Image 1 (cartoon, protein in one colour):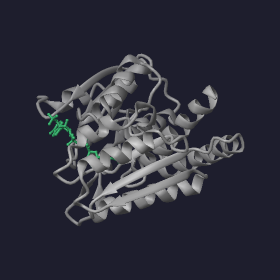
Image 2: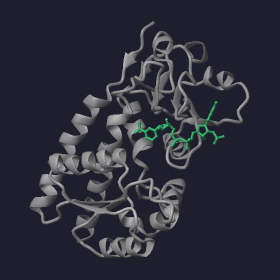
Image 3: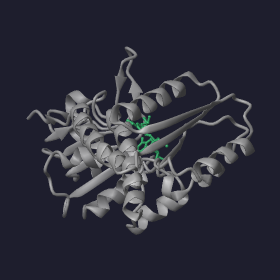
Length: 285
Ligand code: NAP
């Protein structure tokens, strides 16, 4: 059996077209979505990420602000900038690029962002809203994974989902989103003995570990949906995920590739969260 590919690039393009259309309508009504991106320091990879995010904003018609600060920018000055953006009605989402320099307490910064503008969904309050099933922001990567699963047309009610990894930004919110869709959810982590025992029973496996070949074909139930969040390099230096694609695609029903699966969805869901934030403001106006 060869699994159907879940194409994250294509889905991303479709969703961005939808975001652009909704943005045009909001802008015409005087509520152009606005995203502020802050970067502190000179990490080259982080600068590429923020440039991509700001470009993506322009492509869908958002207003965007990019604030770049030197590595010695003080924590207080950063908190002051966040307070100003919290109060700015043209800004519906605030993103502070991680990692921050060591002298800045990242959790203090994340918690300083107004919950109504926390489009990364990383704050404790956003996590609480997700857990309680309240309206709020879903962290972008798991939100994107849910959209990818949706394309398979499989109803998750009564299905068994296994999430490998329990980070606050991917594994845990992923499990909650699957639970919201009435899947029966198992979370595995580095202390789980016999990972394959769990994954072989799963109708859906989401691998978010950061270790290649964590999931191999013999660990997958025939026909399962396999979502690969991992970003790793193989021996040739090529990008690969946590899933041994070649063996798993022979068993799974649907599978995301790396690259071209989860990766492209993350910025798209950041745009979606910012759009939803602006739509909420517009609804209240
Ligand atoms: P993380 O914070 O390092 O968490 C990794 C998780 O994997 C931990 O919960 C860890 O368990 C678990 N783990 C480690 N070894 C394991 C094993 N042998 N068996 C089962 N579980 C194991 O990483 P993360 O931030 O969640 O990211 C995970 C991966 O996704 C990384 O490769 C990251 O680069 C990638 N990622 C991709 C995107 C994207 O847009 N495509 C976005 C975010 C992250 P413990 O908790 O017990 O240590």
